[in-house]
Image (cartoon, rainbow, N blue to C red; front, side, top):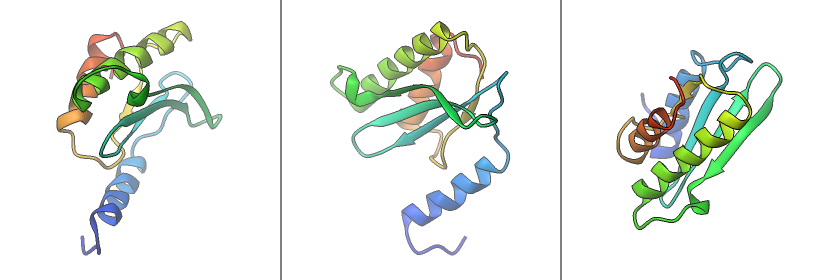
Length: 115
C-alpha cells in the first residue's frame, strides 16, 4: 500500500472494508468515524440509503474519550432498540480495532446490539 499519508491509507482500508460490509433492512450497518477528540456512529440501511439512528460522543459526559465513546455506544443501542433494531453489521471505517473503536464496539454489544 503505497499511499502518501495516513488519511489516504485509511481511505484505502475503508474502501476495502466497504466492499465486504453491506447493511440490509434486516441487519443495518453500524458505521463509525473517529476523530482526535470524538467518535460518531450511525446505523444505516444501505438498501434505502437512510440513517436509522446516530450518535456523537460530543453529546456525552465523561473525562476521557474512551468513557465518552462507551456512553455514546449505550445511547446508540438505546435509540436502535426503540426502532426495533437488534442486530447490525459493524463497519469500523478503516480504523484499527483498538482503543476507542474497540471500547465503543464492546459497549454496544454489552448494551444489547448483536454483531
